[in-house]
Figure (cartoon, helix red, strand yellow):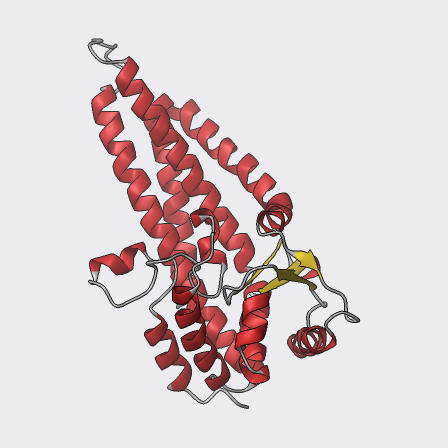
Length: 287
């Protein structure tokens, strides 16, 4: 169901982008908007992993330097039937982790120094299984596509804002949309696209939790890890770029946790930790 939901949301995002392009420039505008999205997706697909790893100053780790950590990743990758991903360590005391890379053959798993210190072996294994599940589900590609389309919609919204400013007082031709109307429409579209992107992110986290639990045969280690990670992220917030917050296993941003109102849940990049823990503990994953 989550895979179907994700696919539908991606279709809605793409249709929204093409519609905005048509609003700007008719059929030609729709084609240009779609072409821009394809180019941006290509850049994101090929280079996003290097960019985000460099952004967090992640350094590669070989087996000789961290044999236990390396061994856990190698064992889980073998169980999952995928190649051994590259392993990185982020110099941060905030306990967190993420996976990146354009495919299972070109994947990387990054963990912070803080998460290695905080979690016991079983809990860390649950987190690593979660990240390998992201790789296996190709969530990096899905997230990159969603982020790129949302970025293109945001770019159109910015263009509409400047168009409204520069077009104030103009009568405009009959075939040109009113710049104020265009501004309002694109702002609403950009807001809606952001909500859709966050919904996709939350959906993929549930899938990765389930995949990780199946890989280790139990949801309990990951459930315990998530509770510790949420507390750790609150105690030591990471200086993270909001555009990459969805990649981490728990939100690295301060203020991203807590119960809050139902409306506030729309703006989360991750499902509530309590709900994730409940799902992990409510099913038997072995077998």
